Length: 585
View 1 (tube, rainbow, N blue to C red):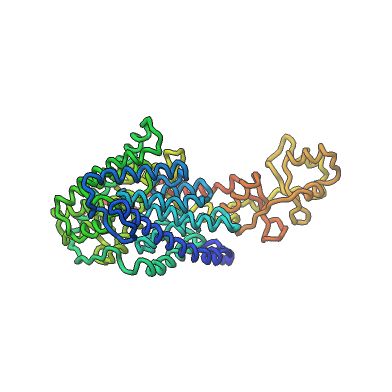
View 2 (cartoon, rainbow, N blue to C red; view 1 turned 135 degrees about the vertical axis):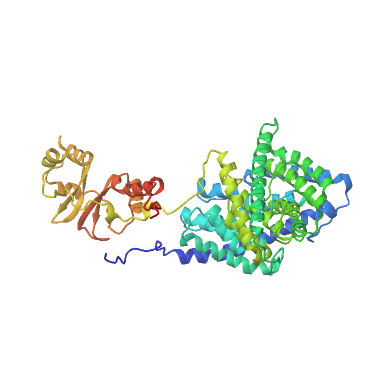
């Protein structure tokens, strides 16, 4: 078989250096936005719970308001409703589904209002006690910044998507210090492709954010942890922990949308829903104050087993109720930090019964498995758990438990928490993707080489009677002179030329109209796309770009031929070896 120097592992993209260069300012801007968002959360926490204009990092659990604390989340909910009603409805929700919707159905266009109002609303929501994290809002805000930069330049929708995702993942990197997990989040949730043209700029933005965050947030793991290597029996414990974490993830997702349906049935405008949810948040905060706000300090205590069993159970129940009700009301806040806390709480409970490892391993394992099961992004969750703690000994338990949770959720649930909201708006998202069979095959493999050609010197009326009469064999024919392509002709074009009074040969008429050509080295997918754009069914194949030497013709039915082999690969069951029966002598 001869070597073909035109075939590549990846498509050549001369604009890749430009996109990688644009990802640098996107990474810096997203890191700055993360700093602003966290500063707003600190500011509003101090204003709501301590009556102080301060940017100090204080937990709302340390307030001295007594029963008046119930009023704080209600006031925050009213403000969020007003911002959403009179500012932008796009600030509602936890950010990631909204980013996915903008990518897939909005040509990656986001507004400046979102970039300004999303961090403000999220700062108020979390600062008034909302049980959310900062990661969802910063994903939305960073994505909006990347999209806005792209909209000021002459870029395609695919390039806008790249910068949107670069901004979103750079923001996540800045908040958590997890650049690898952020890149995997892009691959598993946001890009819907695996191509250097998008993957490399996203990685550049995350790397820039990873270095830049040290200026504002310092370096190192957020929740440093070091466990001892687990024993072999821990594998069984990991499967149990993963199964229970998957159940928790599925239960939280189902409960969230049940609550959302309940709010939708209320005879009340949606702008008041966050205030109603504020009642539940306030009562929950009165029962368990540490369930208020982001709760990074609580996650750290759970991971290090600094919380007794009774408190862990109370946190698990109260935080779950507060988070499900608050998020179901359509307020603004993220899902990662609450899922980390809920999963870690489950791990504290299970650490009293699971054998095979030290107790501090199981909060980390359940935290990661719950996150992976809920997001439908297991690789992101595994690397996220590692980067949050830098605990290398936990990698195998994280892998076993997270994939178990993910398997349970994919079998028992049709959609994840990331896609259910989009599906309710009438859009379906298919999360699986692979290499298109049409990309794996070239035109030379499917084209017809023995082409029936119309000589350019043939008169028009002769072409009509001989090629488009009762014995017509093809829909369209190439017109050629001495082996060089002149044009294409079908019945409609030929009749139009005759009705217009054209006389003479077919070559002159065919040459008057442009013709799309393919070359043998093009993929079936590329040619199929051009056929769809130009609404043609057959395309002549020339030997090289710029040449007119005809070497074949390809039709739409030819292009779908690789799908037949793909179908058999997926559905035909074959057996090539059968054990011979043992016959004693």
